[in-house]
Length: 265
Image (cartoon, rainbow, N blue to C red):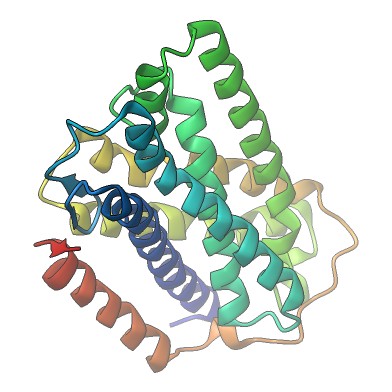
C-alpha cells in the first residue's frame, strides 16, 4: 500500500475514533445531568433514554437538553488546546485535530439546525422556552458563521501533516493531499459510523454522520490558496500502526456490545 493510501487509512481510523468518542461524551452529558435531576437515564451508543423526564420542571429539561452540546463545546476547546500544545505531527495530534473540530461541529451544528429540527437538543430548548423564531434564526446564523470560519482555518493544520515536498508543492497537489487526509476519511468514516449507529432510533442519527462533515469541504477547497508551508519531520501518519487499529476495534466493540443495549445510570 502506498504512503498516501496509508494516510487515508490512518486518518479515517482516527476520524471514526474521534467521532465515536464525541458521540459518547455528548450522550454522557445528557445522561449525567439527567441522573442528577432524577430522570432515570439509560445511556445508549447514540441517544439517552430518560424513563422519568415528563414530570420534571421545564428548566430541568432545558439543562438536560443543553448538557450534550455543552459537553461537546468543552471537548472542542480542551482538544484544541491540547492540539496546539502538541509539537510532533503524530497520530495523536491528528486525532486531537479531528476530536476538536468534531466537538465544535457538534455544538455549532445544533445551533444551526435548532429552528428546523425541534427534536434535536437545541430545537427542544427553543420549544421548551418559547424562543421567538427571529432569535432562533439569529442564533442559527451565528452558529453557521462560526463553523464556516473554523472550517476555513482548519486547512493549514491538516496540510502541516504533509512530510513530502511534492504533496504541497503546487495548488493542485495541496488540494489533492487535503482530499486524502480530510475528505476521503470523512466520507469513508461517515459510512462506518452510520452502520455503527444502526438500528435507526431517529432519522437525524442516520443523517448526522454525513451532514456533520460538510464543513470539511471548505478546508479541502481552501488548500490550494495556502502557501509558504514547511514539510513535517514526522512521517508516522504514512505508516501502519497496529496499536491504533486495535484501539479502533476495541472502541467499536464497546460502542456496539455495551453502549448500544444501554447502561442504566
